[in-house]
Length: 151
Image (cartoon, rainbow, N blue to C red; front, side, top):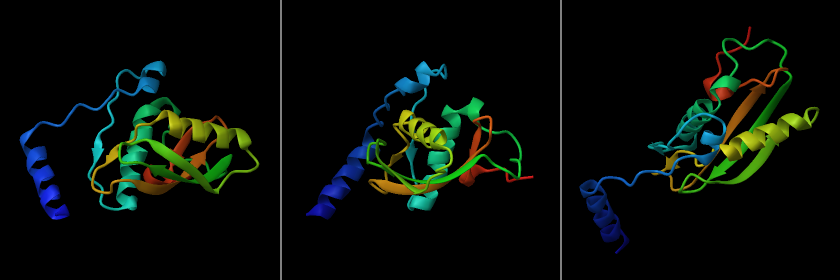
């Protein structure tokens, strides 16, 4: 029975155009214009991590460290993010928080929550992905997924 419902939804999805995704209100408040969260075709959390990192970079272009990072970084944190089937962040879990820099923890959490909705994990339903935040003294960052490396 479930297979029949699944096939019917596939046929329906192929016949009708997708509904437009809502604009990100925080993007407008940050002066980034209207940004639409795309769907992710990722089939694993590791693949989804790339889509999430690209999404965060698009929303934070002025905060991304350009080029190779210095060898001594101010803070490094490993954050696990739960994203539901509509792209909302449902949980943040620090696997390794930069305890010497609580302001960085607060800013990373704010940045992740402000970036919602994330790309919709269409093939995964919901997803938990992990990324490492590489933070410099001026408050710019790179994510390990898209890093340009270090000097």
